[in-house]
Every structure is written in structure tokens, then in C-alpha cells.
Length: 183
Image (tube, rainbow, N blue to C red; front, side):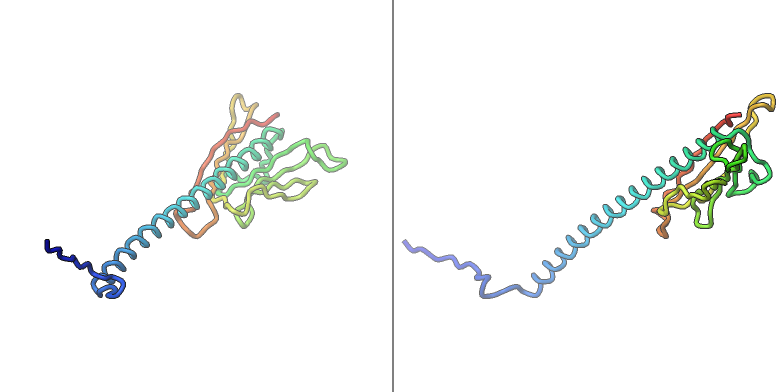
């Protein structure tokens, strides 16, 4: 019996050919690009999710704070309220936190120059209630008379965006509310 030995290519001594090197490098580049795109897509999605969460949280906090102030006020102070423009301003008369010797106090709800919702009280000054991660791009107040001119309230519309230069991550969110004055 004549047994022939089969010779296998000795990879350790010969190395790669130029064509094999190009093919392997191309395959590796394709895999790396695919993984990079998946990673970037995941990070973008996570960034948009965090932005949306911040926007919704600030919008709800802002509208709840406005509603609380309206419900605890007894009248709208028309002289400084601005229902015609955007952003508007709402001025209220309240019997809470008034200055000693007075029977009522004035309260203003407005946007500052940075797009934060602020509440100004006579006794405690200005307090901004939205975070610096978001900006309010629209604030509208509409006075609503309900019945026989004896009951009134305010419809508030607010639009909040994430404070970023990336358009896809701004995720604007608009919310409306109606609150009746305590009278």
C-alpha cells in the first residue's frame, strides 16, 4: 500500500496574501461601521428619551403651578395682565402672602428672558419654576367668563422645548389647562 501524504498549506510560514488582507480589512470595516451606527442610534434614542422626559416633566410642573395660583386667587388684575401677546403675562390678586398692613397681594406669572416660567410675589420676590434644561417657547393666557359675568377663570396654553441646538432633540410639548378663580 502506497500512502501518499497530503500537504496542507503552512499558514504560519507563509502569512496572508495581499488579496486576503484586503478582504479581511474590508469585512472588519463593515462590521465596525455597523456596530458604530447601532451604538450612535441607541445613544440618539436615549438622548431624545431623556429630553422628552425633561420637557413633559417641566410642562406639567409649570401648568400645575399656574393652576394652583389661579385657583387660590380671587381676581385677575387686568392692568398688568397681557392676554393679547405671546408670551403673555398673568397678574392676579390674592389674599395669601400679603405685605403687613395690606389686605391683598399681587402676583405675576411671566417668562423671563431665558424662557423660564417665573412667579413674582410682593413678599418673596421672583421665583423661576422651570429647570434650565428646558425653555418655554409659548405662553398664552385667555380670560374665560363662564356664566352671568360672575364666574371667571383662565385658560393657559404652554409649549416647552428641550434647550439644545439639535433640532431632533428639542421635542416640543404643548399642554392646555383651565382653572377657575376662587372668587
